[in-house]
Image (tube, rainbow, N blue to C red; front, side, top):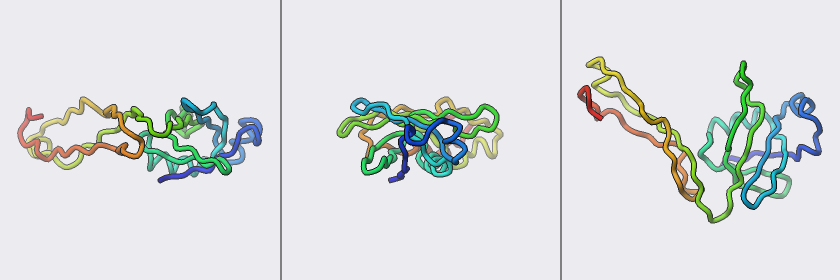
Length: 152
């Protein structure tokens, strides 16, 4: 499981001080967890975000405490696309969660490749309700059986 080491943001100071230190402000919260401001190393967050996305459970290490969480929302800079702030949703033990899981289309369709068809993707993600340990990172769909134009 992926892990991020976090610091209490009250210990670090203002946002510009946090960002100048190569860190990113964030917050974690949950049904039985108080909203807590934290800071995380930006480079480490980008690595974990790339691997986990918003549908995989990660562990936030806050000193001796550990919290299982999902990346709930990420605020990005409008010009550079760099993450500026993240919200983590701490999962309640033994409870199911609802997560939008991305759909990945895999394979090559003969209808698209040889016959000039266009693959129209109506859905980009599916909402899944499951226990955190059973959440898939993505849903793969093989499109190679699409041989003729008009098939679904």
